[in-house]
Image (cartoon, rainbow, N blue to C red; front, side):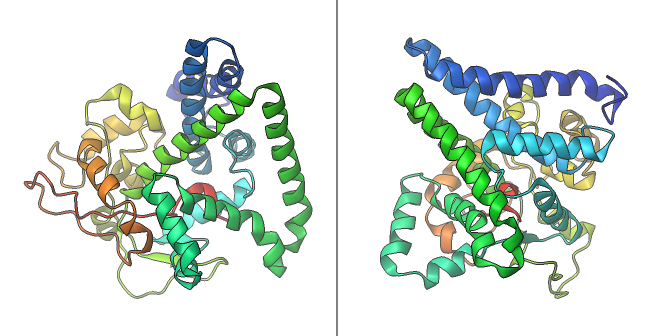
Length: 337
């Protein structure tokens, strides 16, 4: 087993977390269709947590931080995409686009959702904003829709049409079977997906104030400023529950220790809390707790959709410093192609 994983100390945490992800997904699906309400509640929690961890394992596997062999990381990464429904984009494409985020120190996005919404009819744009006001992640679903439509709208990707149609057929058939087996389970599955996406977009929202560039191909970003390591750290934030809150930070596999991750991208998830403490003081200005960010996530949930900037984080001594931090939307690594 130790020869399989990249780091010797990663065997136990990864075997435990990956096992929970797989068992939690299957067991969660089984329980949300059971008769007792308490089984439904347990299944809903298990399924949602499994979806969240499957997403962050895609990130870990993209950095080759789990297994020694890259091909093994790719296979497990592809499996994780099938669990959480991000399989429409090939894992290799997701990895390539995410690496640009690290190398070029920018949000290199696939689809300019803001330009799309501004050019859309008012009724459509207002409908999206109304859904976002109601906490439905409409922008994230637009991004997923773009990924699905891309082989049929982009001539250079025609060769992916058969693959996309096959994935759509499999996913729709699986959901139809779930509905036939238990309509209640189908509803709870959709609610679990909503909560899973909301967790991810909260984390993504406040981790960077990078410039954003909608680039579909490999065109480099403009060389309009110095994007060195100092720029990277100054525009990266660690959105943690609390520096010493070991268990709640694990909800998203310590992904909140984002400055530490950017300082050493191949550091595995279970090392990040200790690595953060090694690198930064307890009063590090780039640390913003979830408690500080929840209000901003709420009050700016519509404004950030069409905002031209991510806002500012004010002086750390200000108790409401995060209110003007609008955050990002539509930058999920799950919709990168």
